[in-house]
Image (cartoon, rainbow, N blue to C red; front, side, top):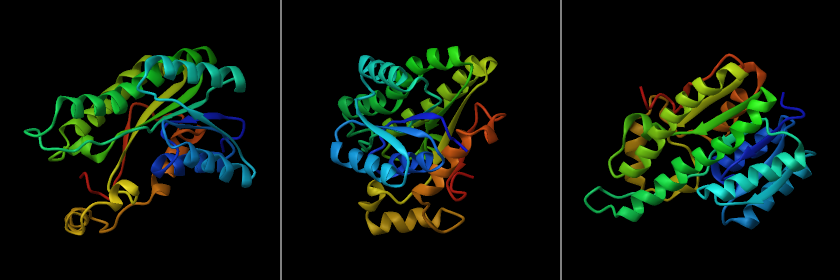
Length: 246
């Protein structure tokens, strides 16, 4: 489905990013496994992909840094010849009620989640425009759609992702480039594992399917949006949340 394609997945050393890298590689794409600090985990993802017969390379880089993002994308294009898929998955949380939230906690989440996605889209757009092809998939969140107490910074960043997705879809659509977002709900990851049981129970009660999602649910949606099967879908936010955001 993705044979011959080159994909960059940011924040791909664990969780949804890791599963996305494995899934895209499984469909035939060459995957750049971007990471910021988790070198061992990123290299483990690469080795797992190679062991399964796929092709991948780890690339360290803090995408919130404009020049670092540019260097990564330039290097990937030079080495592999094209960039066909960009998955903006890198993200952090620094939760707090607004009365307690520091300026640093707000700024850092916006810097990584929102500006990091902007940086990568900015630099990859020129390449995709010349190719007259490409798929950009941005990771938003059900929190960016619904809002969530204690996450003013995170929700702002994820709502911003949706706005950027729509705007860029309009800018790039005439060249055959699609730009879409995914809004995951309550997904089993390291991030959700640390939540108290009472919080998990309350969240599960708000999900019509009455269960948490799996990283594979998100990864398969990414693969679909990155394929020619989704060639006529752009500017959309696909909720993968078990009905939580209805």
